[in-house]
Image 1: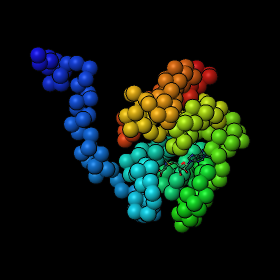
Image 2 (image 1 turned 90 degrees about the vertical axis):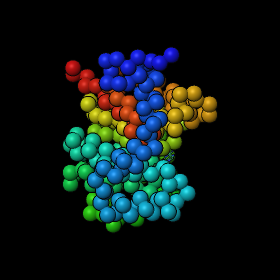
Image 3 (image 1 turned 180 degrees about the horizontal axis):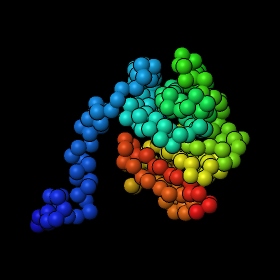
Length: 236
Ligand SMILES: C[S@@+](CC[C@H](N)C(=O)[O-])C[C@H]1O[C@@H](n2cnc3c(N)ncnc32)[C@H](O)[C@@H]1O
């Protein structure tokens, strides 16, 4: 039996319509979105090329569309203080630094020595590199050492098993109205029926965030899912 198309712009009238639509365009849509997004700075384009050609995990790179999205959030919110877990080759840290005011700062945390060296070498070549403070070590230890209520944006993109710990620390670090950006919230679609430990951790993270009344939430299906979580003001 065919589903009804009436009154909804020709879309099938059941809850699965959105998924068939996504399935039909997902592959091409990624490329199309990239082609219709402004190129990044020459240094960021170089980091992208380097990461794709020279590293073992090129798919970890956020890339142009998400990079521009991060820049937009930083610029629109007029953020001054950003904390970022997981810089890898430095792409997203530098993207956000480019969008920050001259007195803005990104504190970014990396536990892999080689990645930290690589990222720092790229930061040193950028006029915005001075806004980035790269801390080497375990994310949770360094997050715990940062002051409460002084951060505008936290970007989380490392170590899926610990997302929930990073979330709780991030809520402490954020000022009222501050924003958490959690990458890979769909975890390649594995959150729907989680089997391995990382997938279970990401599914639990999404559920706990969704149930947290201290925050306003927006779950975006951009790339591998981006969970935007805004700490509510205690004054309202
Ligand atoms: C998925 S990559 C981030 C990619 C990055 N957002 C980009 O745009 O290229 C995750 C990074 O986090 C680092 N990392 C993983 N676990 C960590 C931890 N517990 N503490 C600090 N860094 C960690 C990894 O070494 C890796 O460089």
